[in-house]
Image 1 (cartoon, one colour):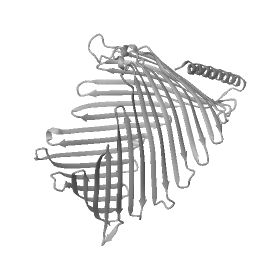
Image 2 (cartoon, rainbow, N blue to C red):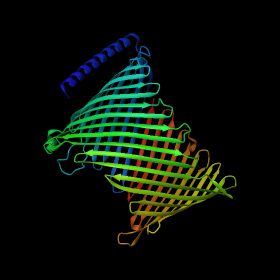
Image 3 (cartoon, rainbow, N blue to C red):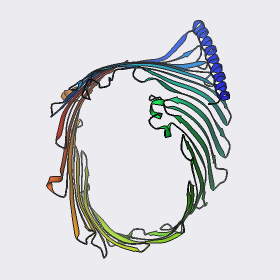
Image 4 (cartoon, helix red, strand yellow):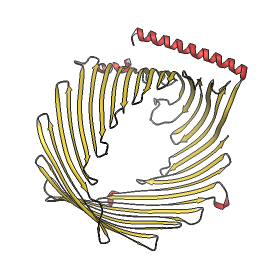
Length: 594
C-alpha cells in the first residue's frame, strides 16, 4: 500500500472514530436524560449430552452447556437510536479413548443505528469473543506432538454511514476483524469499501470499490483491491440489457520461513479484469426469443524471481435464437466464437448449431393415449482451423392407458420406443431403446399406497453395447389413529451392462441395489400433551458383479421429544452400521427459553 492510501485510511479511521465518540457521547446524554428503553429481552439456556460407542471399543462422550441472552432497545425515541445486544456463553467437555479436552467461549455483541429512518443513517457494530481450549488428545505418537491448547480472542468492528435519497443509496463501510491466538499469534483483516445503487425508471446501476488488508494465521501478507460495476436496463418493451465490469488485484507475500524454502513463490501479484454485456429480446407474441452476449476476461500475474510474467485473455461472443413455430414445433439455432491469447500462442474456436424439435399432443386411439416426437440437430465446429461436423436425429413415440376402479384405485401402463442416430467426424452411432412401466395407486381416508414396475432396454445398433435396467418401487402411508402414523417403502433396481472390450470380447457387468425403510410417528403417547415419539429404520444393500462386492448399511433412529411451556427436552438413540463398522449413539438435550 502506498503512503497516500495509507494516509487516507488513517484520516478515515480518525474521522470514523471521532463520529463514533460523538455518537456515543450523544447516546450517553440521552440515556441519562430519558433512559434506555428495552423493547424485547429473550434468551435460552440448554444442556446437551452426546455419547457414541463403536464396536471396536472406541468411544466419544461430550457435555455441552450453552446460554444466551438477546436484547433489542431504543434510546430516547425509536426514530433516534435503535439497537440490539447479545451475550453467549458455551462450555464443552469431551472425553474419548485418545484423551480429553475442554473449551469455554463467550461472545458479546452490540450494534445500533442512529437515525435509521432518515436520509443519513449511521450504523455501528462491535463484538468480542474469547475462547479457551485445553486438550491432551494424543493423535500422534511421541513426546514432540504439538499441543492443541489455545486461547483466542477476536475483536470485530463494523462502522458504516449511508446517504439515502429518492432513487439512490450511497454507503461507506469500514470493518476490522482481529484475532489474537496463543498458538498462532496475531492475525486478521481490515476492509474499507464504498458501494452505491442508482435506480431509474428503466434501469438499476450498482457499483462498489473495496480495499482489504489481511494477515492470515500462517503469516501470509495479502492485499486485495476490487471494483465492480453492474447495470441492468429494461427501458425497451421487448429488450433487456445487462452490463458488468469488474477488476480485482491480489498482492501476496509469503512469510520468510516459507519463502526461504521456495524463493520463486516468495511473492506474487495477480490482476483479473472482466467485462460482459448480454441482451435478451422477446417478440410481443412470445414466439421468438433472441439472446446475445459478449464477454472479455484478462489475467496478468507476476511471480517473484520468475523468468517472465504470465498473461492471458479470452474474448467470446454468442448469439442464439429460439422460435416456436407452433405450439408443438420449435426451431433453435446458436453461434459461438471464442478467441484465446496466452503466453506462447493463441487459439480460436467457432461453433454453430441449428435444430428443429416436434412433440405431438396426445392422440386418442380408442381408450389409449398416443404421442410421438421428432428432432434434428446439426452442428459445426472449427478449432484452430480444424473443422468437424456433427448431426443428431431422434424419433420416438409412446402409448399409455389408465384404469380407475373402486373410486380410490388407479392402474396405469405405458410403453415407449426411441431411436437416435449421432454422427461425429468419422463415427456414426445408432441407438434403439425401449421402456415399459406398470403402476398402481390407491388413495383412501387414512391410507395411501403406490407400486410401480419399470423396464428399459437400450442397445447400439451394429454394436455389442447393451444396457438393461429393471426397477420396482412400493410405498405405503397409513394413519392408524389421529396420533399414530406408519410409513414404509421398498425399492429394488437391477442393471445389466454389456460392452465389447478392446480385444473384441463381450464383457458383462451386473449390479443390484435394494433399500427398505419404515417409520413410526406417535403424537402424545400415554396421553401426555407435548410428547412426540418417532422411529425410523433404513436398510440398503448394493451388489456389483459378485456377492464378494456386497455393500450393506443400516440405520435405526429413535427420538423422544417433550415440549411443555418454554421447556424442550429431547432424548435420541441412534444405531448405524456401514461397511461392517457399527456404533451406538445416545443424545440428550434440555433447553429452557425465556
